[in-house]
Image (cartoon, rainbow, N blue to C red; front, side):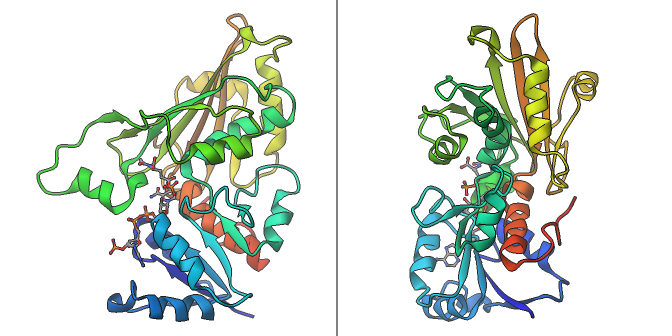
Length: 314
Ligand SMILES: NC(=O)C1=CN([C@@H]2O[C@H](COP(=O)(O)OP(=O)(O)OC[C@H]3O[C@@H](n4cnc5c(N)ncnc54)[C@H](OP(=O)(O)O)[C@@H]3O)[C@@H](O)[C@H]2O)C=CC1
Ligand SMILES: CC(=O)N[C@@H](CCC(=O)OP(=O)(O)O)C(=O)O
């Protein structure tokens, strides 16, 4: 059986990355639209309804419009945009979120791909909240840096366009209302939104997501080794998510934004000092990999009942 796939927004930054990962897979067939029809609502409606699984790589409004154009009860949807990440009736597309979540995804019809920042954040924080190592009401901060392809074609043009003068490092989200905060709050299990302090670096792809914790302020605080053990346990055996040993992290002493390169891996690190009662949790990923296209392909595999890592860059 072949699965009929339509990628709406297939020539955008994320769409092209997904196409690369899916090409040459005989178990999949593709519906494509000519350049002059790719934004034509009638042509999109036809393609969306003919597909078994559609992947939306569109701005939020266009993603909502695409879902509204589906008028059958069969086509399954993976939305890479922010439009449906905390919406009723949608399943959050982070298979590693918690035990049993992958099974929910396999049965889901509407799947929202996580944001790239929440992917790193949730991977670090969710197991600690679930395991009772981080109190749900703990005041959490998450910071880091993203490659500029995180802002899609428009931001790529800002950094690579003629006459541009790109900044080396640029904090943003300074209104403290970034669109990723609702999904970080919902799926972490925290009772208050984290302070989210993102930045863009002058690198095409890659990202570092960091959660520092002042353990010494916490009653009955866990040790660094307890935190590491909870994360190592949560992702044991994962072909995608790795947790460096404490020795390896201490030996590294740093993590570069390029750490996983152009792959779909998610690498987690625990740096800590029990004497100081402080920990820095760090995630390294590709915003276009596990942060977008890699996750979409992983979700497609799960929905279609195919090997979960087929087509992934690991
Ligand atoms: N870039 C990243 O790292 C990540 C992106 N995402 C999300 O994925 C989605 C796509 O992002 P990204 O690929 O970066 O964005 P891009 O701007 O690179 O691509 C979006 C594509 O959608 C097309 N498009 C816009 N409106 C319509 C429409 N009405 N009908 C059909 N096509 C349309 C655009 O056309 P045109 O080429 O003409 O502009 C473009 O090709 C966004 O929601 C983004 O937030 C999620 C995680 C990470
Ligand atoms: C550098 C940069 O601007 N990054 C984007 C996040 C990219 C991403 O995760 O996509 P979604 O928009 O689908 O959530 C941002 O912070 O808005």
